[in-house]
Image 1 (cartoon, rainbow, N blue to C red):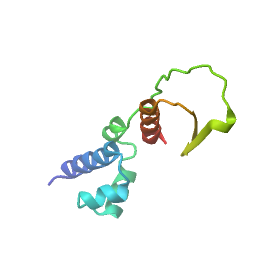
Image 2: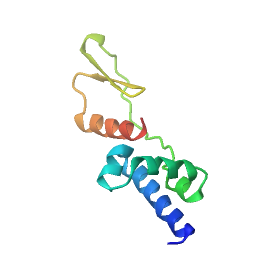
Image 3: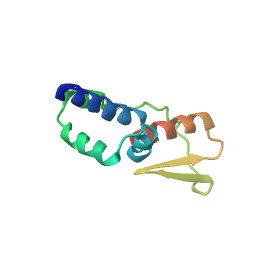
Length: 107
């Protein structure tokens, strides 16, 4: 295999791992890739355009906000990474699930 082919193979692996959203150690184990080699190649390819293209751009999701008075005693606070979500009694569980999924992908 030529040097260029090896580099393309590792670019694809790094991109696939990043796109999966899994932890590197878990992805490497599932794909029979040595974790130390993975990190070595990831560092080598950090300036590579193929790897850069695979990175997801940061996006913001518009969320409707109802302007209601918040009773602090019936408020639930959820911390996910650096984000804090306050949920009132009678919340929309589908909306909360979607917000948590979006935050999980970003945080």
